[in-house]
Length: 518
Ligand code: ATP
Image (cartoon, rainbow, N blue to C red; front, side, top):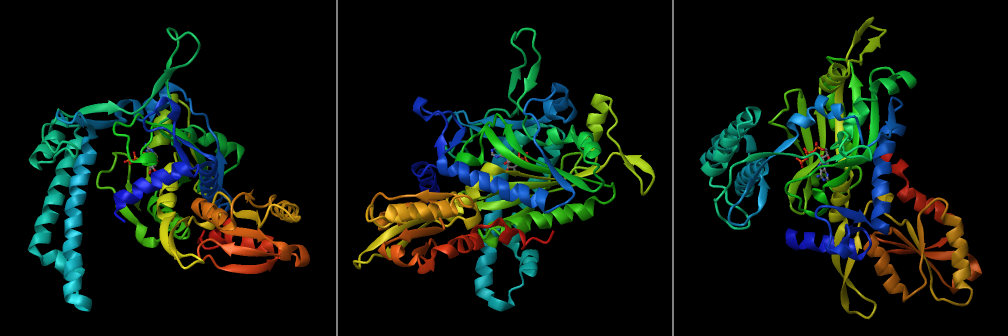
């Protein structure tokens, strides 16, 4: 299936099965804003729990907070968002479509990269085991030429960004003959800066009220509470503060479903450390975060690191964890070594000391910070798009049909077990009710008695339920049920009393967390 087809199917499936709806759909929707339905909100909660527990429960030195969306306007001056949280935008005069100039350039570079990789794949096939990629990259003329083009453009772009030279950014687009994906033309406007923060007024009389912002990231709520948490929690370095919450950005180009939204949710953790230890902790978090992704089982090949060429002036190092979304590898999570930039800025703007007294060295200093930042919605899309599978299966009557199944990691599945009486009579619904009562306190269960058992299995497959439990006439005699596994469609006869353990062994986060080397 072509990736664009798959992506369309995933979006349609997300709607049909109550995962994601367009916001305000009955009013024709609101662009780049989405609502999560009955199954989507469960999946989203499970993703958040997976992240938060892996941070706060597994690390004695990480605590969670929940700070407000509205913050004092000076916060955003100190953080640099008022002055510099801009995207360079450019319009195509023919299609009237608006783009982020940096994204156009990045996509152009990625296309060259893809060509290089194709060249390498071809050579790999030709030379077999004796193939030496490093040597090939260093000697093959076509690869060298393309790599040169990438390097030249990247360094030009980096320089233009650091000098805020918008004319030069446009020139890079012109020189590389980058065209509008919609009109195919090179008829571009100038590049302009566009601030991404939404503002509003505080107070009931708007004339007198101060302009405040909807936070564009949750991290600043952590920085301004650094001292509160450190003092009241008697935290010693190194320690972390984790938070999950909404963030808002007036994205110029909002497309690709829930990948780029104007209202979204972030899971961020700031890890406060001694200056000088930043490289060690950057590596620690880089590895641990990648492990967290790997153990979910979405496929290691679907992830890669992308180190930033373009470091912010305060950053020592930054890397993205990119995921292979249906539209290609894109940023899922960022890991940043931020020095003491944020706390020092808040110290300067607030006039309050934000220092740490280190009793070991008998000195006071502003801690350094390593940040991990991931979007809940992008993680949701990574899970959903990878889980979505269509497979041809043979039915009992020998005919074939397509089974649509969401192979969601069981710990994240919205519903863990479906409880299905074979028929709506003979005391089976009552017996099924007993099974539901046994399981519902530990697991999110769904009771269904409508339609044939086959249809009910398909509906559960389509929302990713790992277990279906069928109650039949034999159950009344011997207290056993049929347990059907989503992925293999295998069926076991199992005692009702054994159900809790069996389900728990697959859906408990514990099984994932034990694989993390924390
Ligand atoms: P991008 O380059 O894709 O715009 P970013 O570098 O601006 O992302 P960060 O500021 O590092 O993103 O935000 C941290 C994380 O928040 C991202 O890795 C992503 O998962 C998520 N995120 C950022 N912007 C959005 C958005 N508009 N919609 C959904 N998730 C987002």
